[in-house]
Image (cartoon, rainbow, N blue to C red; front, top):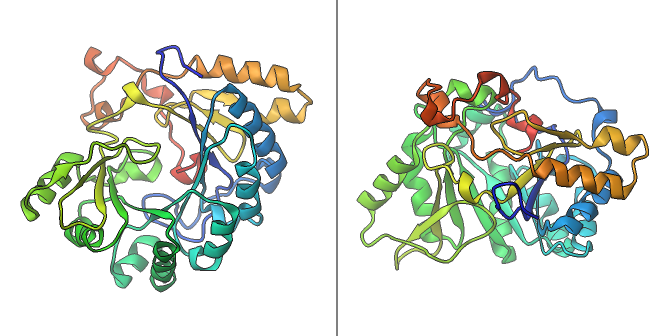
Length: 335
């Protein structure tokens, strides 16, 4: 399946819930209003859509939230996704709080990879960032995941004044363990607009300062845009995702399906299409597939996050109007 810019779209991120058992400062405030349960897509509806998307060329699925493991039936849903013809890879992004509990079941369900979001390696900082005292549970889950042999990626969003000073400790985690430790630039979405990100360039410079003979890995790892680095002493690797300063829009291969059944074409824009309403009104698979094809054709060329940061709307930034920007939090969109 291709969009109007001839990009092959073969990767879909499915959010199965907007709920989470943490309250990270840049993502979900304590007083957030959750989506009513009846507005959340059922697993049956999500499986129907996934079959249609697979028929259009989607091959890889990432399960997200909120925190996907808080929704009952998540593991069974993953097992069902693995049985869909055309779907070759199913992974999950989790905060790790429930990972120790579900790790064995995820492995039995056939999960292909696990991304764990962790922004600090200190228990006291963890509680300040997340609002919860769960670092011990998360760490035990990480250890169990590594022992499983399943591919593990640890995602860290470095923020000035919050956890930037811990970047070297995360480097050491990649050096001493067979995991990919990835640094993701904070995107100015929802509450993320209130924080100052550490740029991809600064992270790479720090990595090269601390370790000799760091080189870029040419082998592509996974479905995303991370650029990976290591040297001969590393058991794992360091990945850097310059989502803002080194945007990868020209090779973007992804779409997002929110927990409300909204097909989102780009994180930056509100643009997309509601699939849940026509489904619940009895639309046929053929009509639904045509809706999907038309929507993919409207996928934007690129985001304008950098233009927002430098506070300009000139021609170089595409001249986009601010009223198209996405203002929801990542927990509502699907991380």
